[in-house]
Structure formats: C-alpha cells, structure tokens
Amino acid sequence: MSDIWGSIPLTDLLLLCDSGTWGEPSDPKEGVAVLRSTNINRWALDLNGDIAYRIVSVRDLQNKRLQKGDIIVTKSSGSPQLIGEAALFDLNDDRVFLFSNFTQRLRPNEKKVLPKYLHYFLSSPQGREVLNQMHRTTSGLRNLVISRYLEQNVPIPNPENPEKSILIQERVINRLEQYLDEHKLACRLHEKIVADTNR
Image 1 (cartoon, rainbow, N blue to C red):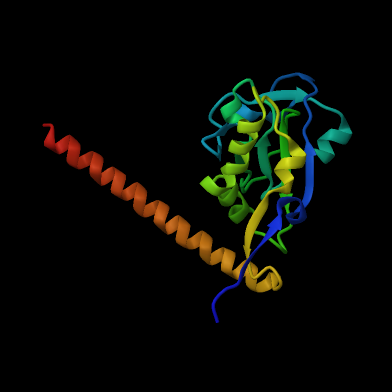
Image 2: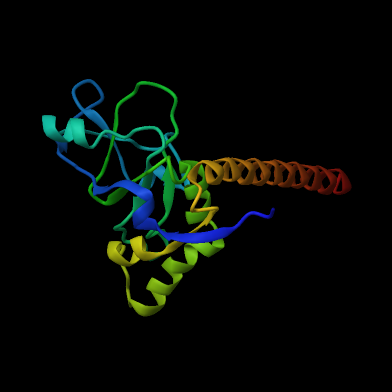
C-alpha cells in the first residue's frame, strides 16, 4: 500500500514557539552564550562567527535554553532576505546556549514530526514560498509575521498514523542526505576536472 500524504499547519506540529532574550553585555567567563541571526548561515547553525555573551535573568536562563532539536528562526533583520532563515540546533554536548530576541524558537513535537525533517522542509523551495509570499505582499518587510508563518502547511506522510509517519520521515531524511552527499561529491569532481583541464 502506498504512503498517504497529508498536511498539518506548522503551529500544530510544535510544542513551543517563543521569542528569545538579550540581557546585558558580558564576556565568556561571566555571561552565557546567546545565538543571534548572525549565527544562522545558509540555513545552518554557524558557531564559527561572533557569539554574544550576555547576563540574563535566572528565569530566562532556564526558559530560553536551547535543546537539541530546537529550530531557530530569524524573525527580525535589516536584510529582508534573511527574514525566516532557520537553523537546526543539533549539538551533542552540554554547553548552554540561549537565543536572542530577534529570533524565534520552534520546538517540534517529535511524536508528530522529526526536527531534521521539519528543518529540511522549512529550508526547501516549497517551505520558503511562504516567505516569498510575505515579501510580495509586505513592502520593506523587516519582521517575520509569526501568525502567518505558523499557518503554513507542512507535508506529513500518514498523518493519521504518527508512528508510521515518523518511520517514513526517517526514510525521507536518509534519501535526501544521500542525494546531498552525492551532489557534493559530483561538485568536487567537477572542480577537479576543471582544475586539471586548465593546467
């Protein structure tokens, strides 16, 4: 029997959707790392750039700490093309990271959707179309319209059977990553051929 695909509004796939914090300037010894939109590069987490260290309240230290599987979305930026860019927080260590008030955190309900699957969708041409629509209808967009963003439909396999859906999502992820690896290999091979030809 073939898989049945449906769609679920993004808001119904989340356990949490909230804005970040900022606090007061500090340093790595006294402060806590707060990720900003500058730490999102080409839809991926980038910790090689400048990381802000801030003093925040105890409440924010508890409530704004990122967990593996969270997705950070740029919601405000001076560059409209960066609005909506998202990164998957997938670190496997105990370092503490918060997220800034210019970003939005999405925490997927992993009983319904895998974080990596959701991030791949949001960064796909189909997922970006909702951002393109916002740009076309909102002149000079500088802030993500959260209500509209959360209304977008996410394609989900077998939505009536969550356990089966998760298994299919895993297969989709594996196939996509296999394709991406093959594409990278092909690009490297092409670069080598061009370099050898120009010698």
